[in-house]
Length: 154
Length: 154
Image 1 (cartoon, rainbow over the protein chains, first blue to last red):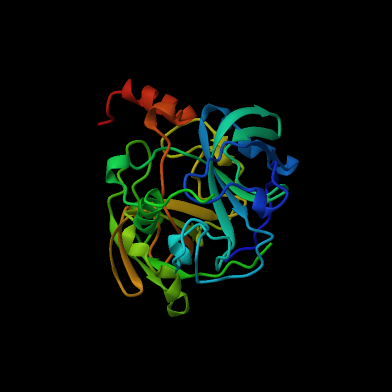
Image 2 (image 1 turned 60 degrees about the vertical axis):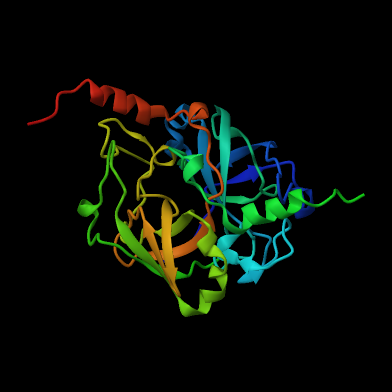
């Protein structure tokens, strides 16, 4: 396999996981920066031309693996590969961010959901999406449906 | 960081990189299977409900890192983080596949672009995309534009 090494770190407004918006309808509009290490600067050439990026990063504070679990938005359990749970066999996170601008080694982005100082493994251009009419979202769509039927808790 | 371990392997029709469709307009419609290791079976619970999956995998036969390079579809160089090059600081690949069906530990999928027996690191549900009208594709859109002006080589 390989030995993971950080290419940089996320600067985000979130110091702990309870501050990160989670669950159904969570909006990820927080701004932050991706701070790339100087030795990887050349790898950023032409990145400014992309509006959206995939960021691969490490759940460096999750510390365990659980093959099934209940996500914040559902009271039923699901397999880890059917959720975005941090407790994964390989603790790798994936976030799509909007690239707002670049100043040297700093990429200003919108949509961060990582904790502050999260190690970044990779950045890739986001090139295309799946058309919404072709997308099925499994248990998540069902949980949303059930949730719509509930009165808001007071 | 962490020590990567395979959760399974890709069965694909591609034995070598020159067989994988690459470059502008490349179609990834090849079918294959994601063969999950028995110890991770519980993690697949409810995965059948999703139409599309992110697959994170290892470029296990790439063997080097190049911070800049020319992709197959362009004669100009770009930074590795602005391309899908296999020669990355952390050799992790990302592919969106369509889930056609599941038979136990085997996920039948469409859209594989990995070599046969590529180690899989993670599978995540694909939940939403960026609206096409919001997407900018940088040097790739420019390369496509230049390419459209060229006569086909004979």
